[in-house]
View 1 (tube, helix red, strand yellow):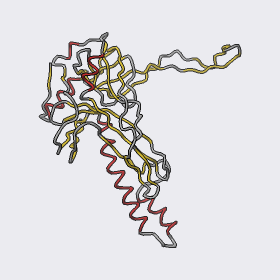
View 2: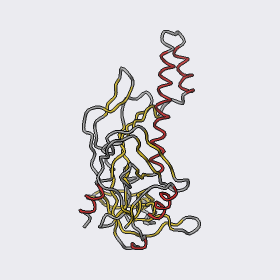
View 3: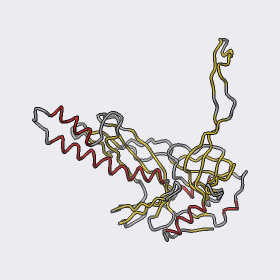
Length: 294
């Protein structure tokens, strides 16, 4: 049903790869988010919360570089241990604090000199613009629904993204105390998930600004497109809400596999929330970015 649409939309949907580590820990945590391109000029969309992570990475890495430079100046100082604690406080480094975060944008463009990032002032939406490239590596571009009323509650739509980070092209250099991109598996699988359009999501003024789906958006699919069987874009995956079903089981006594058990269970329905296509188009219009409709 969605096979052709997934192939089409997959041509311009790309992962954003993250690697990070905690201070004084050499264990690297991989992660993914999603973006999709809206024209042939290097403009793409993702979530604001994803874009904020991209922006934060530079600040995190600069802080750690400055810390290491300050630490190098303590070499041979008999008070180095005590002074180290002061530097950790100065650079806000300690247990459970991120020391490094690196970001990669695979298969987007052949190279780029910078990325301009504009975030929506209210909704979970951001524009990325790759600059300084010679050639794009994505295929096609988003085509947004001209008339959003073409879908109604009860229709089935699908989201595409990269929720399961399986790339292995990263490593830790103990001598340099640094994480970096290395050789290894650079790709990570895309994953579609469908859902029924259940309700429109309204803002405080009653305007429909989002689309709720009966299934969750998976971690890593944030920023991925929401589309129909033709590949027409109706929104972008933003977050997952957890609706309490009220079927609570508190200290229920049951027999399981022939043995008595005490069960506690509080079930929730996990529903996906997507930024509405009309909000996206208004945002693009406000930044005078070219896009396509049908």
